[in-house]
Picture (cartoon, helix red, strand yellow):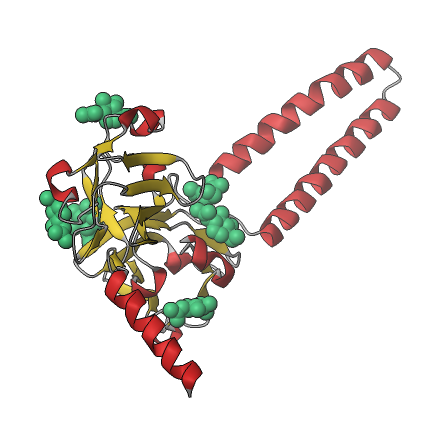
Length: 307
Ligand SMILES: *[C@@H]1O[C@H](CO)[C@@H](O)[C@H](O)[C@H]1NC(C)=O
Ligand SMILES: *[C@@H]1O[C@H](CO)[C@@H](O)[C@H](O)[C@H]1NC(C)=O
Ligand SMILES: *[C@@H]1O[C@H](CO)[C@@H](O)[C@H](O)[C@H]1NC(C)=O
Ligand SMILES: *[C@@H]1O[C@H](CO)[C@@H](O)[C@H](O)[C@H]1NC(C)=O
Ligand SMILES: *[C@@H]1O[C@H](CO)[C@@H](O)[C@H](O)[C@H]1NC(C)=O
Ligand SMILES: *[C@@H]1O[C@H](CO)[C@@H](O)[C@H](O)[C@H]1NC(C)=O
């Protein structure tokens, strides 16, 4: 009983005398080059005489800014933050230790700790900065495929928005045909048009990296067209396209063609040999063997162009 009472007394003293440090409720999102205020404050002003406020990168411990003995100490700041990180000097007496970071760079992305030390105790809060971005990129070149083959149409999403809040919709642009949909952190196979059902998928393991490339299996001639990867997150949206090109010969067709060419070539060689054997003139024979490969290749390239 006695122990509980002592404990309660001790607790009430801590709460009365100590302080709670407040930070932002979630990550701060800001575009490159902008200024961002990293909040860090206490409810009641703290005595200034032995107040120390330290802002550091949580990962590297790099000193972003320091307030010590009643003054901010730009000389102890790490070079990168010199002239870029500022306290609000007039706010510190009121217990507001927020920091303004100017000209945000890609390297500024990450976690920061605001550590406050005073005779009333100490504490810290963590602030996370995310670079605002919403970029969707597709395939630079068009993709060509053989009838019956599988193709990958690229779509990469680089965004500060968590993936579960993103919607990705692959469509065929001619006719707005739904090809494949990702919504609420799930692939919705049933949203695909009949023409594509069971033939399209995402690379599930790649999704966490923002890779929403589309796998289209057993390509058919009527799959040829422009595909668009549309990405939505609340108010934001962006898209990229991928072109599925003229379909060439399948490997089976090529095998058949190669076989025909080889057979044709063999027949010509045979003919050449026969002529050589019949004529006892070795000059003709040599001339023919020199000339024929050229004639054959000319014939073949002509035939190829026609196809
Ligand atoms: C702290 O000061 C900054 C700059 O004046 C201000 O934007 C912010 O609202 C202040 N925070 C609190 C809790 O007063
Ligand atoms: C912002 O940062 C960029 C790159 O570090 C630099 O080129 C530019 O001069 C800076 N702008 C300001 C206003 O400090
Ligand atoms: C698709 O992305 C991969 C990886 O970035 C790249 O190697 C490939 O060339 C891209 N394909 C097209 C058609 O752009
Ligand atoms: C989203 O899906 C992935 C993989 O299915 C899972 O690991 C992750 O926890 C999910 N996220 C949410 C917020 O449900
Ligand atoms: C996406 O993942 C697939 C499968 O690993 C890969 O082939 C493709 O190149 C990736 N695309 C990008 C843009 O990284
Ligand atoms: C695709 O994005 C462009 C801007 O990049 C925009 O003008 C266009 O309206 C978008 N198209 C669709 C169908 O969302």
